[in-house]
Image 1 (cartoon, helix red, strand yellow):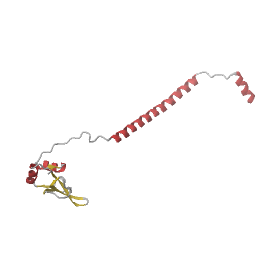
Image 2: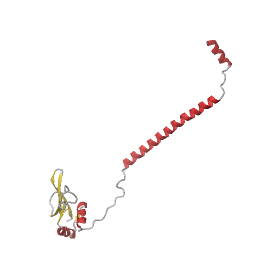
Image 3: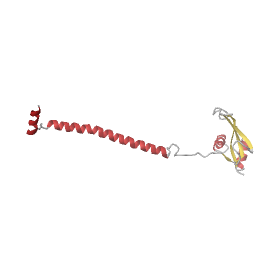
Image 4: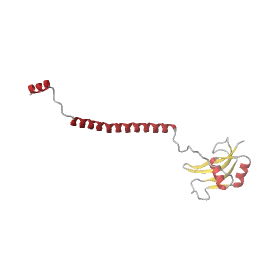
Length: 155
């Protein structure tokens, strides 16, 4: 029989209250348990001495017979000095998921295209100005003789 030291929820809606119990791991969370070894009231302040009440002798007994504590109960046992809890490290915790990375790449690509378009738009008027300056500096060409005659006939 696999025994777990875990929390069993009680209390009203949005007013949780937990029992720290030793239970068969196959039993439901709030169902039957072997023994209640403490209580946990998360609504109390973190420095309140009644936030976690734990019967240390019974906790040591259950750990001695092979009970496995849940993560939260392991924290309580560590705080009480009953069982040392190994620190956990998740270096990828803050890393975004695959879809978020894809969206960021798409956004960066769009921004790069927009920057290139803006740069090209700024360079194009500069090229037109250079062409206009070159045209102004060149001597004015005379119209061919045939065109000049047509202009007089019309006018």
